[in-house]
Amino acid sequence: MKIGHKNYIFDVGANDGSDGLALALANKKIFVHAFEANPELIKIIKNLKKKLEKRKGTLINNYKIHNYAISNKNKTALFNISKNSRVSSLNNLSKNISKSWPGYHESIFKVIKKVKVRVITLYDFMEKYNIEHINFLHIDTQGHDLNVLKGLKKKINDVLEGEMEASLNKKKSAYQNNHTVDNVKKFFKKTNIKINKIVNVKHLSKKGVLNNEADIYFLNKKKKIKFKINRKYNKRYYARVLNENTYLKDDIKDCFIKIYNKIF
Image (cartoon, rainbow, N blue to C red):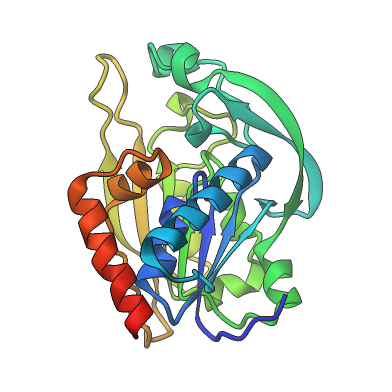
């Protein structure tokens, strides 16, 4: 694989590909490397990419999906695939999940199968492709985000900015061996990374579900961000395209974009 770029976005835990493909379309001068462990989702991601290319009338050449799980060691491991693919993880579910997430275990978190996956570190990936820095690192690996960062080793200091998730309380986490906000803070103290913002994620759809997750936004305190990342996109639009349930306004907008791309 030839890499002809100097600026990169990494999307770790790509799921259906919406975030990574949206970032690729919004940042055409930046190459997006996306990583997804679930082989069934790789097919969905490639399908969404083709649909978007057809709608926009242009190839998305700055995007590549890799069928790997990302962690702090290179190995082979079993990956837990849940009923809802968004909560699949290398981590096993917490033994207390029925109490911590009442009503969610059977409908969403329940593991339906385990698949053997190849696990790599971002350090080795960057070394292999001579990637000097990551402009934006998006991590959503369901309880494994901190291990993704640890797998960068000294290259954590070559990340300019990023976003990840963490639990507020380890005992009430959905996953075993999950990291907390405090664990992340402790880890960053030994790096050039500082936390910019912490936003609690509220779960309000069912009573009794604890507000135990947070999104963490971080920045490199020693390296200037020269290339601003456009992170503004409508996630629901990509879901509509994937499910072939777009609105008339989506179709009209994409039609004009397609005409523009053909002309220019």
